[in-house]
Image (cartoon, rainbow, N blue to C red; front, side, top):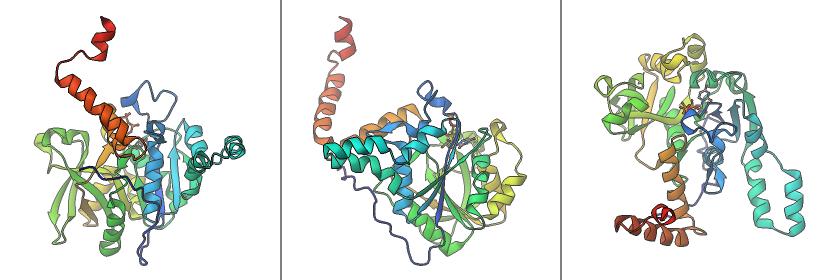
Length: 319
Ligand code: UTP
């Protein structure tokens, strides 16, 4: 049965939490989604009626992280504008008395203290994280990939912050994937900790072939990092694809025994991938109280038509 979407708007930090800042890398080229991403960052593609990156910032805010640094690239403007005030639009909506849309326009800027930094060249995720060094300083911090959505009902990030407080060091999120898909991800070698859902990471390898993968645990786009990662990243040479890989820096930290993994089996969507993007939009639209009932009705009819071998719209239109 589908659950209702109740976005996390109430911060639930534990009093002992040491992490305050989140970094959202959003400077990649988004080549998997061309041509849509030619002039628009993939993180700004709409998921129902909000850009993907807004869900990510909402997730950070819900976990009590009120300082968010966006690492942006050549399409900086669209992301900056989205998390800023929109004076003319707000005036127009206020004049019409349209408080619902006015709130929707104002919400992104109210989520957190949002900062921006530019990654001059997309030299890799590790390099994007290194761009945050001055802003983050000597504190542990979270990294949330701007195109990777965790369902708003999940509490993965809060769990990871708790694990960081318990074990120190860095914490990564892991998801079991079919072996044949592991080449799309960073992959972790792990051993148990005795703590349910928490593993010790003993090694990491970026996008291995299924034969060389140490496990079926894929690294997904949530991290809580110790500031020690910055020194490691400074030394990290370009790796796979000529990019400075965060996985390579974490591999070095893992050999020192300071990386743990939280195993996640909830709902996660990669909106940078076309097929997963479509699934995300459909799933979240079905769950929306304002859109869901009518949309689900239409979807059922559409699927029944496909299954019944009935004329798809495309055939009808071609006739
Ligand atoms: P991806 O590998 O998914 O991003 O990086 P990409 O390179 O834009 O994707 P494709 O394969 O060409 O479609 C994961 C995250 O890291 C960011 C991306 O924006 C994305 O959120 N990233 C990646 C950076 O910020 N800088 C980089 O140099 C690379």
